[in-house]
Image 1: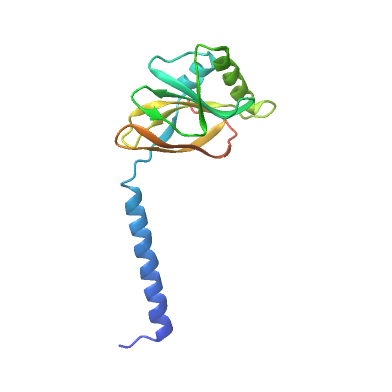
Image 2: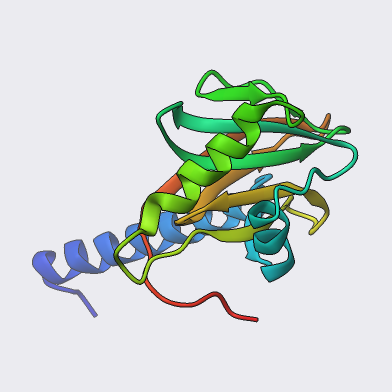
Length: 160
C-alpha cells in the first residue's frame, strides 16, 4: 500500500513531535529540580521572627520591597547574584519579614511559609513569600544553582 505524500508527511511530523516530547520529558526526570512544599509551621516561625538554628538567611528584591525571604540549611550553598544575605540577629531581619508580610495588605493575599525540598525530598531550607512557586535546582555538591520565584501572587488560604 502506498500512502499519499501529504499523509506520509503528516504522519512523519506527528511521530517526530511525539519522539521529541518523549525525549524532553525523559530529560526532565534526570534533572536536579526540587520544589516548595506548603508548611504552616514555617509561616508561623517567620511571623514570630523565629531564627532557625543551622540556617543562613537571604532575601530577594530590593530592601524596601523584598519579595521572598529564605533560610537555607548550612550544608547547602546559595551563591546567586539576586539573593542578599541577612543577619538574622539584626533589626533588618524583622524589618524584611514585616515588609514581606505587607505584600498582601488590603487583599486576601497573605505570605505563606514553605519548606524548600531538593529532588530527593530532602529539606534544603524555608521560604516565606506571597509567591507560591519557584524553580529550585541543586547540584550533587549541595550548590543551589537556581532558586527563582515564579508566577504571580496567589489568593487563598494556606492548607493546614
